[in-house]
Image (cartoon, rainbow, N blue to C red):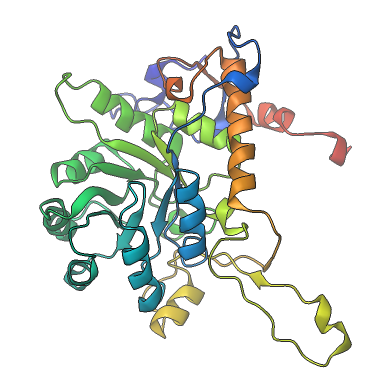
Length: 359
């Protein structure tokens, strides 16, 4: 069984492995619920990734209706961004993403409705830099900025840095995204389950009156089990990209033009999923490739009528089952003090998957 020491990063114990979600399972415990349907799963813990093929106007509305947390993409056109500021800024769970520029600060300041405030997400790939410290300070001191989310970080040092600069929410995940190639291109990253746990443990071990940020696990989440593992490792929320990009309300669907070709009636809307540092994104948004691409583009996704409401209901049912197996009753009980992680081998991972389709 994995002890806390197995998850904690320390230069003094270089043999201790850093872990991803596929490296572990959660150990079952004695159940306390007479029915898993009685588990309490109400919480604002799902964040929509601020990607141009994920979080726009329609998905923001759907997520807010479910009391979840859309992070509106900063790369959408100005008309959509203005609409979002005016339509959603009054929601407690709505987040507006910006870049590391003073122009974005002025845009929000000039266009935010009078007497309103908003949550700001600084959407950058490397969230702990000296330039960003100034940007974080700027937003955190603005009277209209309710909460402030950092760019992505992956270490305790990075988390301390952004919190000291004024961030209330810490976005954890350098390189785990399904369309991200940062680790392959640069060799830089950190297994994200361990990253989340180490940051959680650092802030939990501070004195009681110390500030503890909201921890968001971001990148590479493929299913409900990844979500439960991240919450169990100390995350307060998860940021979803690829999963949400398949939903009806997500941004970026391309609608083929009708033609006189006999088969044109069978053409369905489609989209591609891509990293924000991919070559195709840079070409489309900037007209050229400014840097070595650190993302890829997927084959086309075909439009299906799965809504956010359906997705969220299924997710709540899956988490209810998890709580039942873990001997818990409430989603807020998912934390390292209430669960036991067990390390598994590649054979254990294979055993976890359905077998009948490959036999």
